[in-house]
Length: 356
Image 1 (tube, helix red, strand yellow):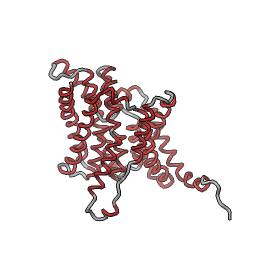
Image 2 (cartoon, rainbow, N blue to C red):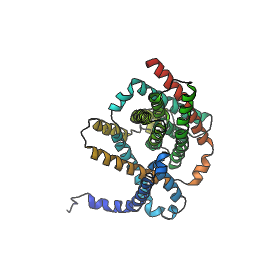
Image 3 (tube, helix red, strand yellow):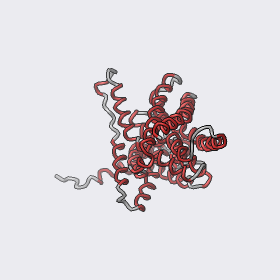
Image 4 (cartoon, helix red, strand yellow):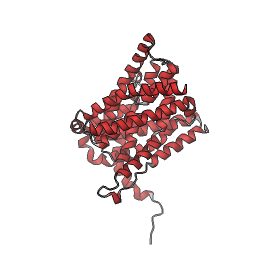
């Protein structure tokens, strides 16, 4: 009997089938990364992930339908497996020491903002705006944690569809961009009138705990000062670190909610193993044993993987799905933006007063 000593030859046809789609997402991701380095886009906090999904949607609603058959396997692989790899490597962007820099107050603020924002999204989205639960939760995750990356990380846990994730990412882009301009303007207005005790450091924590994307946090912080930007990024990274426990808690909550429903006996907890990988990578980075050049290379690779996943998401989203979503998701995102601005500010001021 002849046996195949290596598993690789048997897997070659599978990789050949994936190659066209992976190449397509790679080209879109590379284009997005290059475009994101343009000064105007950097100044306005437009990240490579945002550009990748925009390019994907543009191609997905024009040329891609004619290429879908040979590219489908690779695009699906990018959307599923490259996403999870990207979330794991995302941990290389932060360390556990970041928590110490913002203190217990910063951690408490982030936790309160995350919990209240996601809870409001779930409740208001389904009760007030008539949005399906999955879309409401994805919008809530994007607003509450770290924008597009959180939406993509939560999608497999809530078992959402591509068009639902795209709708959620779109709301992050709209209101995160608005926050970049509004937050510095409100800070300068407050400086001129001295209504609230909000110095540069407090402004940084407020920005990091309430603005959607990391790139948007950097832009909003730098509009005030480099010190405010540094504090904002640290507060944001602590918020990003909460992604893993959030996903685990959400999976347990959804599994519990399925008890008593038809098919509940077969319902299983969706364990987001990639979330544990995210924490493990952050832990390794916290030890400061890796050369800075390697850390920078891994972060670049991570950006590429996430951009490919975003491009794949855009390719599989049709404009008709966005139109069918109606105004509900945008109105929910507007409500959450108002809460992050007003409620988030209140949480910041109360915590600073209690612990200050």
